[in-house]
Image 1: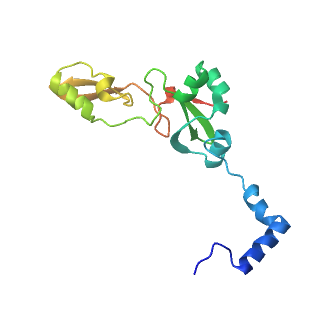
Image 2: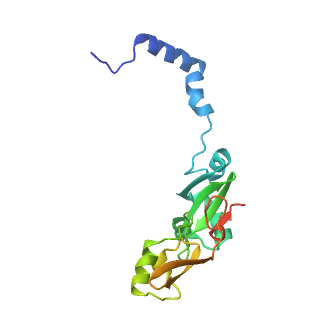
Image 3: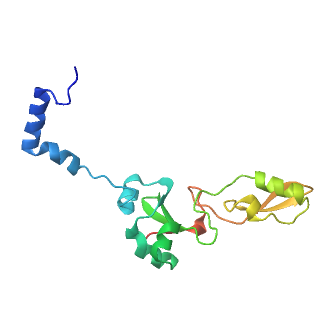
Length: 166
């Protein structure tokens, strides 16, 4: 038969630890850098984390300085990630991609566009997506990736879309 009470030996051990201050001090003494509330500490600890996360309100003033936007809108449209132990910020603004860049030279949307526009000299981002690094065109109904129009950092993110938190 199971009980919800700890066995007397365990209860006695926990009581002794608590009396010595060890039971309570163990969890408090461990520093947990929370990605949600302490981005600087979290990034310093993990160094690189490519997950794009929502920003806490504490970063509001920095977002205002870096992107010249403020308030709830700024917090809702800005994300952060960790690179080299630093906090990197991205604001989606006017269709900017905050995720990793798409380096593929074969895009289903571009292929579909070229079927309907076989010799178009450009393919709009509505068809390619905003995360491609290439300028696209159609040649006889085939999507062709042209020159790279964006730079990516060592972790695969758009250089121009991310700013380091000072």
